[in-house]
Amino acid sequence: MRILLIGEYSRLHNSLKEGLVSIGHEVTLVGNGDGFKNFPVDLSTKATWSESTIGTFFRKVIHRVTKLDIAQLEFGIRFYFHLKQLKGFDVVQLINEAPIQTTPKLERYLLKKIFKQNQKTFLLCCGVDYIVAKHLMEKKERYSIMNPFFENPNSKKEYAFILDYLSPNHIKTHELVYQNIVGVIASDMDYVLPLKGNPKFLGLIPNPINATKINNIPIENLDRIVIFLGINRGTYFTKGISFFEKALDIIQQKYPDNVEIIIAENLPYDTYIKKYNQAHIVLDQIYGFDQGYNALEAMAKGKVVFTGAEKEFEEYYKLTEKVAVNALPNVDYLVTELSHLIENPSWIHAIGARARNFVEQEHDYIKIATKYCAIWQTS
Picture 1: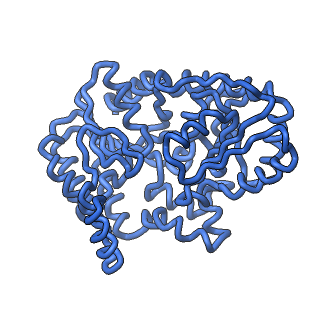
Picture 2 (picture 1 turned 180 degrees about the vertical axis):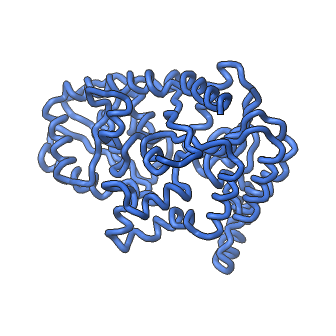
Picture 3 (picture 1 turned 30 degrees about the vertical axis):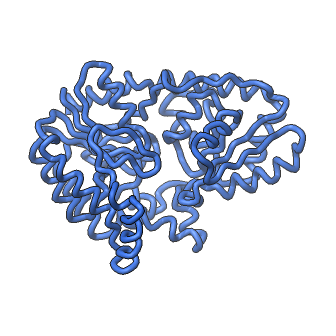
């Protein structure tokens, strides 16, 4: 098959492409690289002018006056010039309802072109979109990434991007996409829950991970256990970082000679990865029911990851032993779980080994690519 993947912001589409190519398909990935992450793409829509020195100056001025981000406009313009190369594909998959990340009207114009000049189009639900945002705002689950929004007025700025998916302008995009897709696929349990009962829902296909590119780092020197917390201020509330910070303060006082705590914020990538690789325990996120890409990559390295690992996740994969520690918005609980690992370091070995095995078994990029092909061909 000739397959077109549109958009990238977690390496999901890159890993899927690697799997698809390995089983004989022709794949083109188009996207903007997702800012500083700079993910590889075949056809780039990166806002090179808007992110240049002079472009950034004008970008800030224009945004201050009009609220328009000209980088978004540039994404769309660059995508437009690729349109001739984006036709005749058997399957198109969108990473999100607005995968081009341009202005709403231009997004819809470009998506209509894609729908018209290709065969089947599918949507991935692997992040926030209209249905997910609506589900979160309705408080359907026992907790969610929206908890801080409801509880803490200081968090509202961080949630603007989620609320934007509920705007009339985006709802038009959502409706256009759902009128033209064959179906929607969820990447983990956090997205299965909002899609239950949706007639377009085709089921869950786990995140593809190319574990051959991720070294399983041997766990050594457990006399001093290294705990790693990476902080991105843009996702401070949605990740529940404050719970981890409070728990670490207690752990540092409780085990001053037994632990080394690394808190990484705004570090150069090479320094960040070096410190991350030293860790035995990685603190990922609080509010998930399942693991996202960052957690899975840490698990593939054989680390004990505090992340989403709820009963829904365990039941789906029929797990009888922990492959990750289910993180909850409860400081005392986090302290208890961390203390147990510090006092019983053999558990770190055991969970880390199971984590790597779980990723290899359930998230193997070739197995996952085969599952995508089966759904694409039979839907």
